[in-house]
Length: 288
Image (cartoon, rainbow, N blue to C red; front, side, top):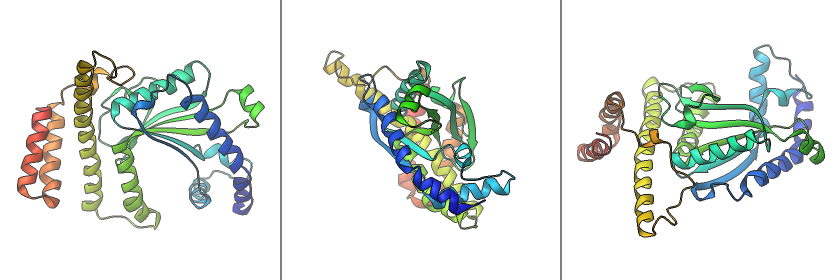
């Protein structure tokens, strides 16, 4: 593998991917039906070459022949477009909007997949969709990914034929987890090390806690929206559509036990017994 040739090609393609990001963002963001009220942040990034070289090295080690002409075929997230929403219900709205754009041909689907934390069951429609590939991630990372390209005639007209982007949709809490995990646990792995099991398990437990917090967040925000609707006679309640029924469904006994276990085993390390008991009462009042 000639990394120098690939680096030159990668840099040469930067402007084309920038224009691809602008075109996709224009198609989605400027649509009047885009559910922007629940959007916290939207951004795009072109993968840095050192990280790309690491990925390509892993592929080559597995027997894949990589060169400057085909490397983009094996790395689907050279361009990442990320939509970060306030809450799970808002993520659902953005995902449904993107699926509608794929269905009517504004975008062409290359792949539609959801990455879910290993050991967690999907808890809403974005993580339980018959058209979606579910990928377990043992570290706790959770996100919805759409790999897309422009329709052929649009791509040809814009000079963007063959270029793809990965649209990533996640909540603020999912984004927070991803940033923390990438900065600490993942950096250890990239350096060739491995965290002790007790630390690695604690990071995963943290992701489970954030999933539970997302349930509380969705319930609180839905209640606030309903209250606002009452005050304004249904106007300005805010969300385009309503969240899937299972977003506000009761938490199972098994999930309650898991939350209790996490609280008992992990939070007590960092919090006082009084804080743990208060948090536990809030959890049980919300889910019990």
